[in-house]
Image 1 (cartoon, rainbow, N blue to C red):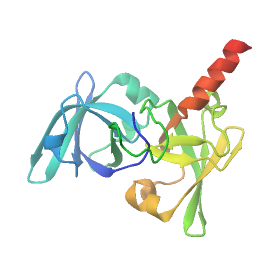
Image 2 (image 1 turned 60 degrees about the horizontal axis):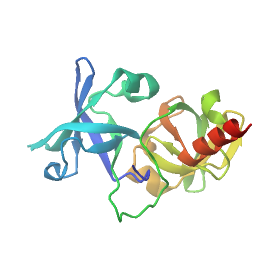
Image 3 (image 1 turned 135 degrees about the horizontal axis):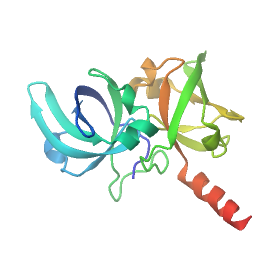
Length: 200
């Protein structure tokens, strides 16, 4: 489990096509403190560490990305040099600063526009119709692994504001209109909707 509070920006160092996609990710995390089999959210997608180490360029860890993950997420757009949002999994007693995030990406949303609003920026997204019903004004979503509050919803489109701090400590400052981003709907919204369906 995660909170959607990004704690490092990693860099894709290498990609290798095997049965799955093997990615090597450079990180500021101390690799000696990363267990094999640990879960790290990479652009919001929970991936398992299969190797880790350090070299003259710093620490790194390897993950395998399955075909299902490539199909459901925006990870297929990764290239060598791509910068990604990272978050290590929660430990008992950690501060829950965002919202409960599983790292199980539901699909991708597309950035329709980015508009300056004071010092912040307002991002307008289009979500897949099957997921749009789970997104509510003032509710939470995880986009690229970042916990964000929804401002408004209009059909399949929704907007969020990103303050300067969030843009600086994540990869959001480099995003552009047209980009696809990983979307995880709020777990509570998912279960409320399922209960409503079962009761109806």
